[in-house]
Amino acid sequence: MLIKPILDRLFGKFYKEYDFIKKSYDALKPFGFTDDNAIASVCLCRDEISQTVRSHIERMWGEAFNFSSLAGLFTAGKTGMKAFISHAPNVNGKERYVFYAFSHIAIDENENMGACKRKGLEKSHACGALCLFLNELSRGKINIRLDEEDIEESLLKRRLLRELKYGEIPDLLTLTKITLKAIVKDLENIIEKVVDAKKADYAVISGIQIHGPEENYIVPDESYVIVDRERKKLEI
Ligand SMILES: [Zn+2]
Image (cartoon, rainbow, N blue to C red; front, side, top):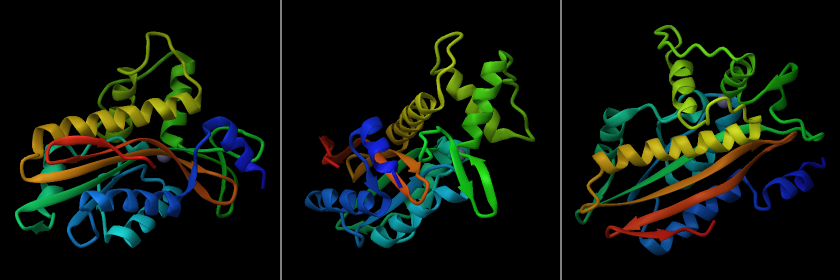
C-alpha cells in the first residue's frame, strides 16, 4: 500500500501506533515514570476504529482511564479529572499521570481525506462527527442549540466554532488539527484547575490518529512532561 509516502509528504513524521506509545513510554522513563508508579488516561474519539490505540496504551501502562467522547473532545470536566487522579498510585508521596490526547482522520491510498473501509462496509468515513460538522458548515447553517438528545455533537460544534474565523470552512485535515488543539487546550485547562503540581508529575502526549487502508498511525504533536513543576519537552 502506498500510504506511507502520502503520510510522509503530508506530515513528515508518523509512527505505527504501537511504536508511538512505546516511544512515549521510553521518553517518560528518564523522568521517573513507569507502569508501576503512573496511571494513564486517554482522550480520543468513541469510534471503534480508534480503540486500537487504547490496547497499546494498556499494554505499556495498564488499563487507562477513558476520557473519550465524539471526535475526542475533552468533556469529562473537573469531576472526570478528579476521579482519574484519585485513582493514581501514590509512591513515596508522589503521583504520576499520563494524558494521551488524539483527534483522528482516515486517509485512503488515493489521499482521500476521511475515507475508510470498515468490516462489511466498502465506503465509510472518519471522523464522522467532524464530517457532520463540516457538512453543516458548508451548508451555511449551523444549529448550535444544546440538544439534550445529541449532547456530544452539540458540544463539539459549539467548541469548534470558537476556534474558527467567521465564515471559515476548513478542509477535513485542517479541522482535525484544530480539533486536536481544542482537545489539548480543554484538557490543560482542567489539569491546571484540578491537578496539584506540588504532589504530582504529569505528561501530556498528543497526536493525530490516522486510519490508513491497512493500519493506524500516529502523527506526533506537542508532548511534554511536568516534573517538580518544571515543563520539559518530550521528543517523540
Ligand atoms: Zn470520530
